[in-house]
Every structure is written in C-alpha cells, then in structure tokens.
Length: 65
Image (tube, rainbow, N blue to C red; front, top):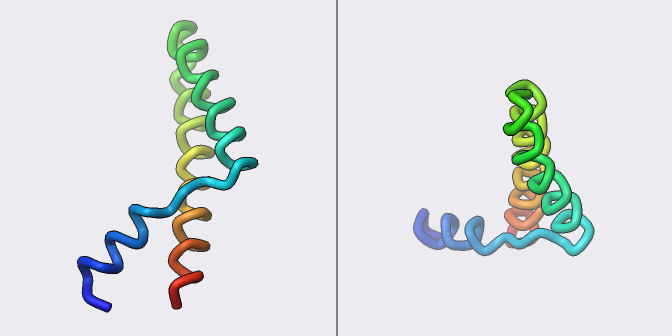
C-alpha cells in the first residue's frame, strides 16, 4: 500500500454514533465559552475533540492492517 492509499484510508475514518454525539455536544459548547472569554475551556474542549478523532483514526487504521 502506497502513501497515497494510506492517507486516503485515514481520511475515510468516520466517527461512531456514540463518538459523533460526544463531538457534537462538545462543539456546541465552544461558542458559549468563547463568548465568555474562557480561552482555557475552549482549548480543553478542542483537545477532547482531537483525542476522539485520533482514537477513531487509529482504530480505523488498525482495521486495514
């Protein structure tokens, strides 16, 4: 498998229904905290979302090995 194919597989990773619900809930909190000037809380939320995506991408990548 070439580099192009591996990148395509990673991009095709989709969130499970449970993870999608978590991400949606977290994303909806961002405007509230930004409006209040809570930059630390916004950063924490974005980090949580990124962790969920990383976990999903790793699981998706492992399924093709």
